[in-house]
Amino acid sequence: MKNNNIDAENFAGYRKMEGVDDKLGTAFPIMVMYPTDTPEKEEKIGPYSLEVAKNAQPQEKVFPLVILSHGTGGTPLVYRTLARHLARNGFIVAMPEHPYNNVKDNHLENSIELLECRPGNITQTIDCLANDRNFKSFVNFDDIALIGHSMGGYTAMAAIGGVPATLPWETDDQIPKVIDVEVEERVKKVILLAPALGWFRSEGALDRINLPILLITGEKDEITPPFHGEFLLKGVKNPENIEHKMIENAGHFSFLSPFPKEMKSSSFPPSQDPEGFDRTLFQQHLEADVLHFLVN
Image 1 (cartoon, rainbow, N blue to C red):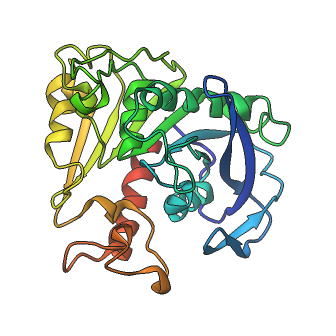
Image 2 (image 1 turned 45 degrees about the vertical axis):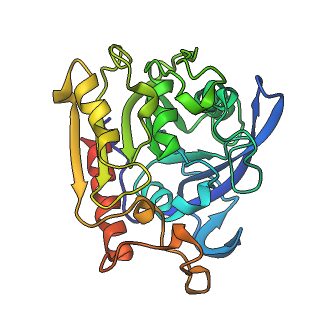
């Protein structure tokens, strides 16, 4: 993915769109950050304050597209600093809020229906941008990457051709059921952050995967421990396509943007890291690693 429009002096625009999940029959929000010439100012987005140019006009160029898929019960806003960094460096970043598997409504968690529908949100998000008057002229649809954290890792692998099968607790008879997912052929690169990949444990589940992948895992991750990464490393036919980084002392939520002081609490696990881990410093390294992978 070569990007000839990188300019660290870009400002990050922010706009909210709406996609449609045809299978679930519902609309879902898509948060988009993108390069703009309009100066940023502090905006309140959800519970967070962020320096962005809200509803600004995109720069008059064509930019690569990155789709970012959040974890189960999550929100795109917890990746706000990574998305803004990419926007400032010449990428349009679209972040769907997965229907019925987000912080506001999570009733599809651990369901077959979720496994079937989540990957489709990637295609629906790309199509939404392709039909949107604000963005369709500024996106290079031949240059699309996909970032997935946790359950977003499942989403990414299923979307690009992985063949998932249910886990024992997801069916009444505990017999694995293969999930039928339509492959999104437009994705050219994938970044997996502490991915949940147990659905691809079956032999041959990853035979069709043949894209460059950056896999970043946390040494102290107790939610998606390192063996999830092993499903990928041992399951693909071309492991040389995978760059793997294990982050020393990182936990599962270390990949999220740092939370404001008032939200940090031991009763709120996403705000917590293993003792001695500096999330703010790590985010700077993460932003650099992700950007480097995307532009090379």
